[in-house]
Length: 144
Image 1 (cartoon, rainbow, N blue to C red):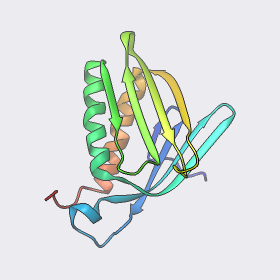
Image 2: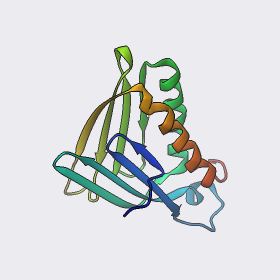
Image 3: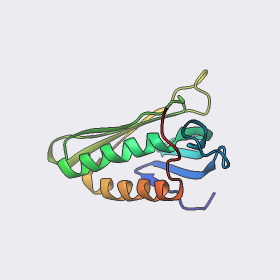
Image 4: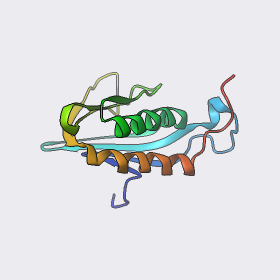
């Protein structure tokens, strides 16, 4: 696939394709996104696709990522209700950033974890990318 990912963070790429339920306007059904995610590292490549990320989860993550970019301390975690993806971005001294990606197409039979060590210059583009996804797929409704 040659299309540019919506979010690129070191060897992790994410494409937000569509809403799982495009006609749903409530919080619980209207915020599921169909996603393609890919993590690539020397000697490995793992891909998962499906409706397993909610845009409210992405909104929480980008808020944490903005704080991380501002303070250069702490971490930001993408907490997904579905077990296909786990993403943690942690900042340590001197602007070093560790990205831990857990991605699997089948959480019942596989686990895959890849770690990338980068610097803080990866944070601002990741924040902007997440904001663009949320602009395309704004959160619908409110939790009740």
